[in-house]
Length: 173
Picture 1: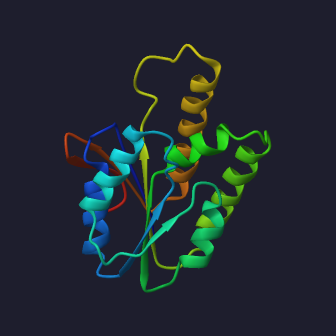
Picture 2: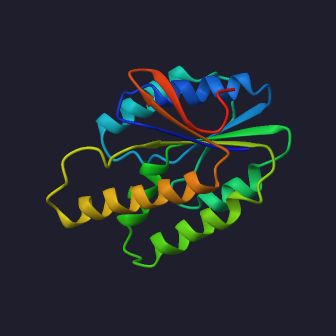
Picture 3: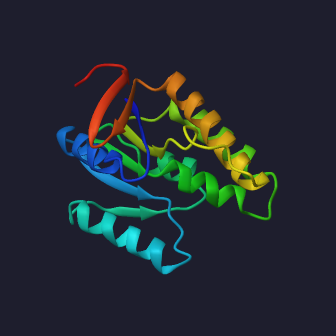
């Protein structure tokens, strides 16, 4: 089962996704995509560490998400990916101009083949002001296109605002 959890910054999407992983009753592996470039990001990573259960194994992978999912997915396991938009930004900021389209397609190709439960968290960044810079506009566009592609194939899509989940596709349970 694939679930996409979307929401704005500090919307409660990660807490919701973590609770979904706990409620699955499966062994959980947390896949972190963040790259720490400054103290503010280090603080965010630490906040997430403190929020999730200590016994969850953590795989840190900022680029090769499809490979990690293939390696870690099992029928008796829930993989929690937090978050897709950091993964997108990691790829868009690489010197390799082919990295983003290649890695995006690899992810989309592998999703339907994965056993177990996959929960992917991502920021809904397309609901605000259109950014002025070329890179930030591309980031918003590519994130939105990725969300649409995943949502089409996902079993469940949930939008979280103010800590409240709104199931947009699939069952509420």
